[in-house]
Length: 159
Image (cartoon, rainbow, N blue to C red; front, side):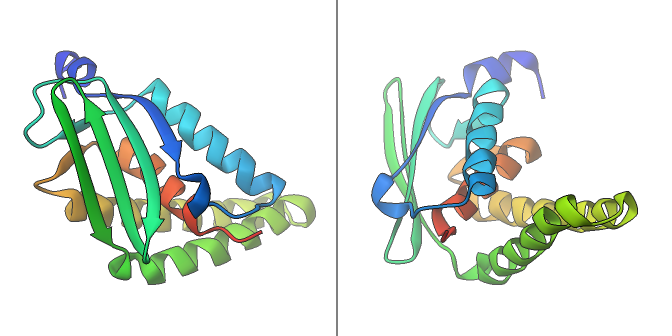
């Protein structure tokens, strides 16, 4: 992807709807903050029909649907996605993350690495699904989709 396109189509801010968030653990809050920081540092986010950014994104849940409110120069649109295709992946991701966080405290490096590989694989699968679900609405690269999936999970975390 050309650097020019990355500069023209990027997020400058990301906000999670406070009403969609629940109290979370320290690990989950840290994961959320890292995802937002990394997302803002490097992303490719090109809404269909927008000439250029930068864009502001607000994410939330409404009636178990993902709501993406996107604003940019001459562009303002709300995208609503069903989360049904993500349910199994989100559930599995939570389970493997919980095991991973426990392993960090109590397991061998080999066990931690195995869990981390599984976690990354599941994360990639969900990110590719997100890219597919956003097709015709918003184009992203895989790293941006990965960070967005982390934030989708953040909207589901229950402390």
